[in-house]
Amino acid sequence: MTNKNYPSELSNWAKEAYDWIVSEGISDGHQPKKLVTREEVWEMLYRYHKKYGK
Image (cartoon, rainbow, N blue to C red; front, side, top):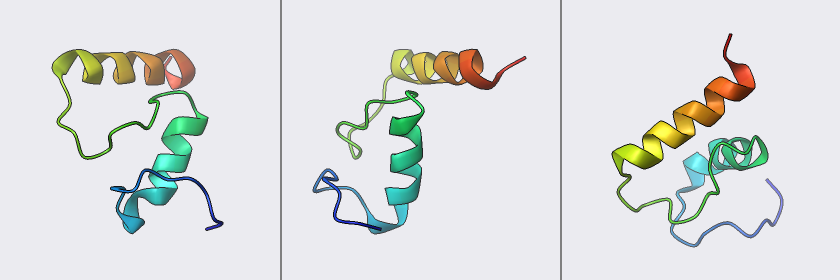
């Protein structure tokens, strides 16, 4: 990995997934350790479906 501006609380093992999820527009990548609401999960699933679903 290069010297990217990752959130300080992001685990090293999650950086590849973080890069992908942000570059694909599925999540904004903010607050990676914060609990997620059902609405946020729905929105991420919906964005994934719009991009990759059938």
